[in-house]
Image (cartoon, rainbow, N blue to C red; front, top):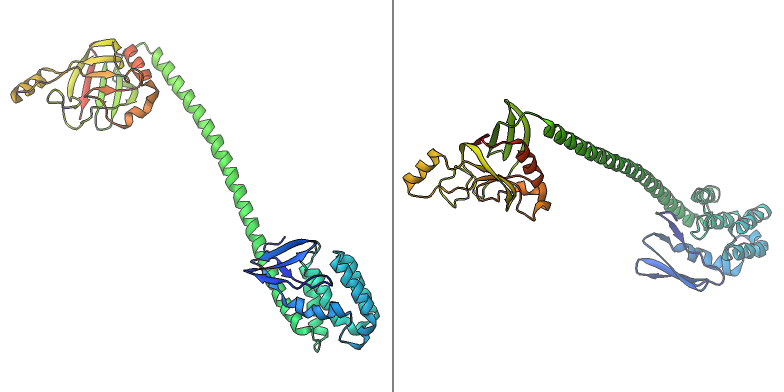
Length: 349
């Protein structure tokens, strides 16, 4: 069914005239109630055809002798035999040319009838236009002009809708192709990323030179391992809950700033593994003494709290430690294997 369907209501011999219900038209057909709404409804055709179909005679003198053929054409129409109905009308116009205006009008109705699966708006339009052109005095002229206007509107709308549907379908195909390509690229990128990470770990773990310096940059939340002046691995880190500024006293949840060393490690830590940093150094102790406070201690580079390894990389999105430097469990295992005691740790603001 066309999206801009032209609905024509024709009164057959056994059909009641349709009634308007709301925005549509409803009538009984084959024991079922049919309703059409939100379409162009040409209900005047029922009025035009009512008398002609029930009486079986035309307004033109010659048409009086064509009554039987008109009734036959109408019966074919009511039975849904539209091609037979059209053939009968063609016989009428050959035998009774004076009834040609009525024949052209009713053939136009058959061609534009919505129940006709082979309806053809172009043929309907041609019949109505011919009637207007060849029978200027016909009583069907006014209705035919209206039909021409309505059908041309429907044809224009159908073409517009068809073009829009074609454009939408083309765009949908392009979007689907892009989505498939993006999915393919995402899978490929994920596989490459895993491959790169695996190679990095393999190369990293095979290095013979131990790490001799650790640089922690608090502002960037970044920790870098160095060997003989070359950066060999970088990690995203989480800091103390109040990370701005150096640690000044016990319980301030700040990560220290300064130069320290890895002085020991604990492989039975509450945080998977941990490497102890030599905080407080002499400068930290002096500053705390001047303020009359305890400098605190137990500053570590450690993994996640036991039982929370599933958090993974997400932990680095917030600062959650009490002043320590945190990485994932997998990362602390790498660091533990490569960083010997005595390694220099520089913590920058």
